[in-house]
Amino acid sequence: MVEIEKIKRDTFEKLGLSENNPGVYNGKWENFSEKDAITVKSPIDGSTLGRVSVASKESYEKTLNSLKKAFAEWSDVPGPKRGMLIKKLSDALSEKKELLGRIVSLEVGKTNVEGQGEIQEMIDVGYYATGLGRQIYGNTIASERPGHVLYEKFLPLGIVGVISAFNFPSAVWSWNSFIAATVGDTVLWKPSSKASLTSVAVMGVIGDVLEKEGVPNIFGLVNGRGGVIGELLAKDQRIPLVSFTGSVKTGRHISSMVSERFGRAILELGGNNCAIVSEKADMNIALKGVGFGAMATAGQRCTSTRRVAVSEKIYEDFRKRLVEAYKKVKIGNPLENGVLVGPLIDSEAVLNYEKAIETAVKQGGKVLAGGKRHSAGNNGYYVEPTIIEAKKDMEITKEETFAPILYLFRYSGLQEAMEIHNGVPQGLSSAMFTTDLREEEIFLSSKGSDCGIANINTSTAGAEIGGAFGGEKDTGGGRESGSDSWKAYTRRITITKNYGNELPLSQGVTFDL
Ligand code: UN1
Image 1: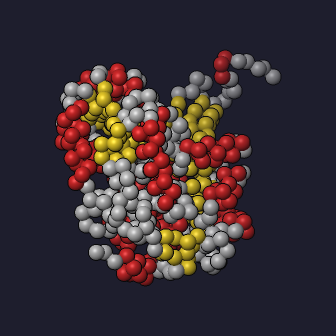
Image 2 (image 1 turned 45 degrees about the horizontal axis):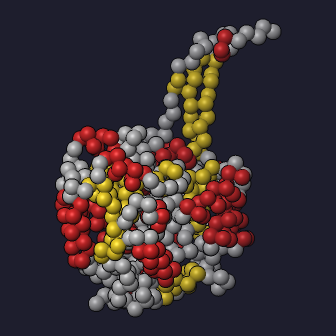
Image 3 (image 1 turned 90 degrees about the horizontal axis):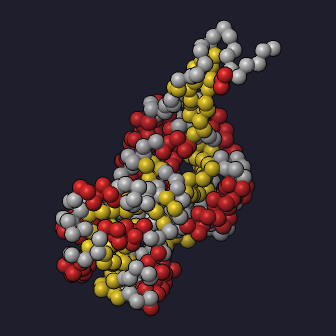
């Protein structure tokens, strides 16, 4: 039996956390205040981990002003130097990886390895950003005019707002923040109120490095509730870009507030990711890939596999083996070795899980595995990973339920597989398990997956930081992390320079004065 209290005490002490933690950082930590403070409970056993204070309107203003001041200085620092500062952040996170990973596990219920993986994702994106500091480049374009040069530069935007979700409480912040800071922006972070302790622990490590290096406070933190601080941020004219991760419903609301004031938004909203398992799949890889995708993080990833479409030629066999695999999965305290599925985040998530299963059964679905709460722990947040045999027209399968529920479909040809696959409003991640080159290329063509992320012979979940992350349709169209996602955190300036002795005009226009 792993003792939560002992782990908590040890981790808190080493990270300088306490029962009452300040939740606002603007170069300095604001004093803890009782007013509206968030009580942090562990979904592992329901115990109270501590409290985190929230930002008042005044402290929000103060933090924003400090970021504005920092921007004036930071945006003048050369890119490679900015990148080197981010490297130091990754170094510091590496040193504290184990402790920070444990906080993630304690606060949001991730398994040990997944908690560690979360911090590793921050470290990786930091090192990626370090290289990016030397690769902030624009194009030089052939000018149609003699004696002219046409080129572009990518300049920092200003203050970037990041509203992150509970399920990747620090990694998604770093995807945005490390890239934004490398291109010269400063960043205001509003974490999920279900993951405020992680934000305090992470900002503790980051703040120490900034202070030690004598860098202006380029990262600010304002804890609070979405309806209060989130709204302030979304409506704030001084924040030219807001990156939001969360539900489609909240994303729609945020996006309308941001676009109303002509701000820009990067939206990473829900996924309803499907894996196609062809009769030409490597069965073992497919089973592992689907199992990991559907059950890891207790199905609480945007990239979780929520639907699997299996060729009728192998359907019976695949179904049997998947159900067998589900039976073997250990559910329980995520800090215990061998546990693969921890708790859901809270009681509301459990109710949503139960409601979805009930609806699925009403709509004609058949529960093949799981389907009910699990007795682990004493808080009731544990549920059994569930497989539901589904029919194409079941409306519930078009919704994202943030829980380990997998809908299983049978298909009889690639066209039908693609209809099932693309027949939902969301478009984040996708997968095809096959060894057939033709099928695979069709899946990756314009007639194939309509998602932002496509995987062949690997899971819908677990994307690497080097690629651009994000999706289409109701997922919101944003891209974060790798590839050229950095451009979204900049403003492009197109420059024309005349070094000649005449003033030739474009499009052959003359204007003889
Ligand atoms: C999310 O669920 O919001 O691809 C992000 C993955 C992780 C990130 C998920 N690297 O599953």
